[in-house]
Length: 97
Image 1 (cartoon, rainbow, N blue to C red):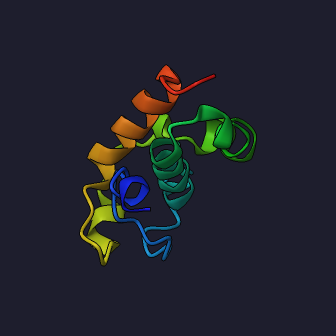
Image 2 (cartoon, rainbow, N blue to C red):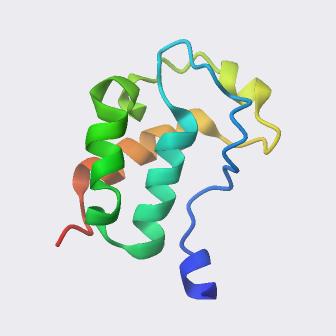
Image 3 (cartoon, rainbow, N blue to C red):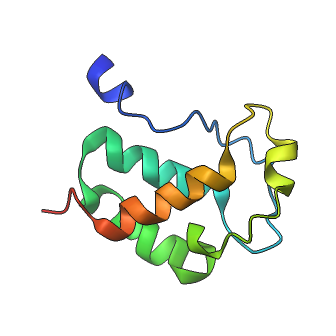
C-alpha cells in the first residue's frame, strides 16, 4: 500500500475550492485521474474518466494559467504547473496495456 501511495503526484484533496475554473477545466477531476493513473500505472483505469467524463472541454490542456485556482487552494498546490504535467502524462499513455 505504501508503494502505491508513494506514486501520488500531488496532494489534491478534491475540496473544489479552486472551482469554478474560468476556462472550464475540472481541476480536481484532472488531478484524480492523474493520481490514479500513476498509483496503479494503468491507463485503462482512468480512460473513461479522462476521455469521456472530462472530455476535451474539461481537460488540463484548456488551462489559461490565470492563477485564480492557486490563490484559493488550501493545499498551496502548483496547479498550473501540475496541469501541464497531467496533460502530458495522460496524452502519452505510458502505462497503456
